[in-house]
Length: 282
Image 1: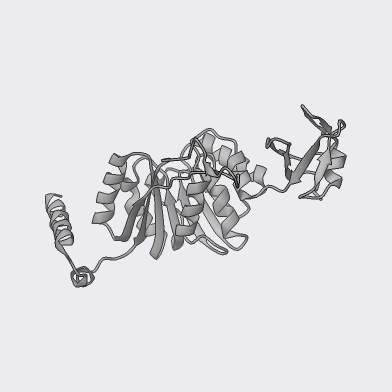
Image 2 (image 1 turned 90 degrees about the vertical axis):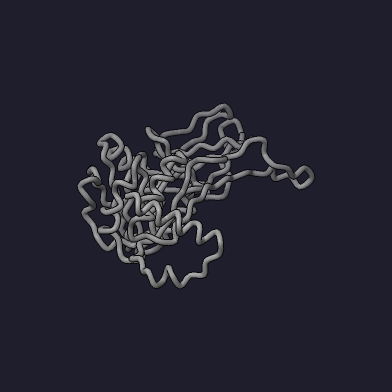
């Protein structure tokens, strides 16, 4: 049974979902009648509660997916499809120490807090005070963030932490901060960047090429839902397509011996020649 003050989901027939906080005496009014707060508090998660007109609603416990989608937004937030993959690639788990810069509304901050757990620590940087405050409000709303240390700080000045396990950067020109990134993470740490345009990705790749980074990948995630009807299974008419470019890398001191030992075909030799030419132009 939910406790007063807890976030709940009320699912109406037809699929409309309401994510709200259960408050004592705060009955829920809708088109199907009134749901008494006391009746909701007496129901079981996964069960049903009825309005005074007899319309049933399902009572659900919000998951991380619901919380991410429910944050109050003043910025473009990361989509769940991207958030889950970022956390996987950064190996965020119990006890992780993770830095993020550009928290915005705090959707990813919330997920990092969830996955790193009480024994972990998230260090979140946001230069704009209004977004810094919004991120904290969203964390408090979700009942998370006890393991999040926020900094209202421009990362041009560098990060206050070192030896982090992973780092995520969502800023306009991440290539300008790669020196700061290296000083903030452990050797071999996983890194992730989010960028909206091809030109920005190209600029970042040039910066990563010049620095102590390896295992660079550029990806985008496309999510297409299908209608869950056994006799009419088909894709939905709309899909969540391109939402941004994800760039992943590792902090890695480069070794000429390692690079030379790698087998090279015609394509790899051309790429190596182009790389050396770019470096000669610097």
